[in-house]
Amino acid sequence: MSASRTTAPTRDVGARSSRSSAARKEARTAWLMSSPALLLLLLFLGIPIVLTFALSFTNARLISPNPPAFIGLNNFIRAFSSDPTFIRSLTNTAFFALVVVPCQSGLALALAILVNQKVRGVTAFRTMIFMPVVTSMVVVSILWSFFYEKDGLFNSILNTLTGGGWTAVAWLNNPGTAMPAIILLSIWQAVGLHMIIWLSGLQGIDPALYEAAALDGVNGWQRFRYVTWPGLHSTMVFILVTITIAALGLFVQVDVMTSGGPQDATSTLVYHAVRKGYREQDMGYGSAISLIFFIAVLVISLIQRRLTREDD
Amino acid sequence: MTTATNAVDAPEQTAQRTVRRRGRAATKRRSKILTYLGLTVAAIVAVFPLLFMIFSSLKPDAQIFAHLGTLKAFLPVGDLSLDNYEGVFERVPAGRFIANSVIVTVAIVGLGLIVNSMIGFAISRMRWKGKNLILSLVLATLMVPFETIAVPLVFWVAKLPSIQWAVDGFLLKQGMLNTYQVQILPYVANALAIFLFAQHFGDIPKEIDEAARVDGASWWTIYRKIVVPLSGPTFATVAIITMLPAWNSYLWPLMVVQQESMRPVSVGMQYFFQLNPVWGQIMAYGTLITLPVLVIFVLFQRSFVQSLAGTAVKG
Image 1 (cartoon, rainbow over the protein chains, first blue to last red):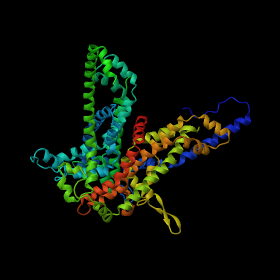
Image 2: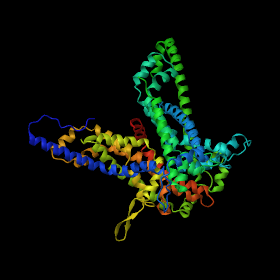
Image 3: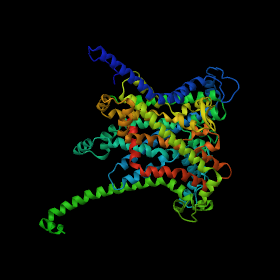
Image 4: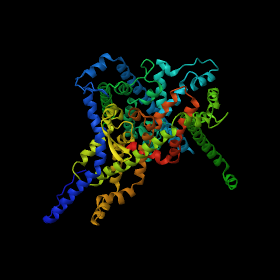
């Protein structure tokens, strides 16, 4: 990956200058071809990132006659010292990620091993397990809110299974069950995606390794432990990082199903940022929460990368 | 027919072999049965909510509730009709929401394919100072979740100009809120798409470029006439991975589109909860905006799954 070098030994000055003018032209065309994407990235990613930093130190409001004023670290101090909903959102987000990341990735791996078997019709099963992934999270959330209602599907099923002995629970209206309910549907929706990623990792393992293991007479668990799992290392790192980032960004389910309630039991960092920064128009504070969210994402994925680095 | 005559030759040996083979076959069969059992359970868990939605959309509300807790909830039985679908279009401008989503999705995918493939081409096949820096910067942005910048981005797009169509031509208006542009432009340039294009274009032999250059072809010609036609599968992959988030987007249009007539399907869902919710209609609307995606997915299942898996491994 070296940059352009025009060091070809040539005595012909004319040829060299025409070559360098061709190189200049090439560079100009390259910039021209890149410019639409670069302009869009600058406008809708670069500037907003800078704005997130800049606004989080101000008292900017979405619609306001006064220009934003610099208020130093006040937004951050306010978040950690006088906003219990923020603290609650932070712990909720952490709880959600701590449960979803291992459960979803583990379940996805088990499913991947299952759909990696060479049995007839396995593609049809893969397709079905993947269907929730292509379904919009808004639709999924609405559907599951119906399941979670007091006279909804889950209570009815539990009632049938227990022969009428089940006391109906309004899952989303109860601070103790609301977050677990959201966790369950979140795992259901995305597990197929991570199954497919694990599956591609499984299929990338050299079959010769399995043959060698078979010659050594290993059992099923040893085969997994010493052949499959080491072969999945880079897949595992990728899945861990992407699930974590997705989990920390939890928003749609909360917005559609509970609006952060009951009693802030399902409020999350992104939900709180949108509530403060957009709905209550407190842009500066919303930006500060977004920045805290971003730093959390960055720190956690860096830690994960370091922890999962292969020592060789 | 011939097996009978073979078996006569060495009856004892054959019997032994058969027993061993049967033993192995039995373990194999048992593991196969377990596999099918696991697959069936997983498939049922994955599909039952969608089946419930689709079949409930055909039933009146009273029957949806009557069927709850029984197997009938997941079967197309009872008074089936398309009344709920009619109700959807009477209650909300569903046609408009769907059209909006189609416009926005097609524009994001179409513009994205052009813009991202051009920069991918420049990075992977041309020599210029700064391309490595640009590539690293683009890849670094993959670490920034959209949710981080969403709130400040609203502040920003409210100040950006937008182009308006008027009777006497185009004019610039201050503020991008409530337009298609604000729903499209932030999603067009996509770091993952750029990376994929750069990687796949890099796999095409560079000798082709040199030959074409000698023949006097410009870089634009090489891009359009050689590299793009050779990269159909890459374009399909990028189209697939950009299409889904575009169709399903929720947070961004929720914040920047207040005007009902400009809203996409996912935000349109809210309108069903403004008065008393009719669940049959909600299920019908959900089916309406999910079924096209499901059908596309099943039809292109193979390339769909491969592209997502491939992206992941390379990303």
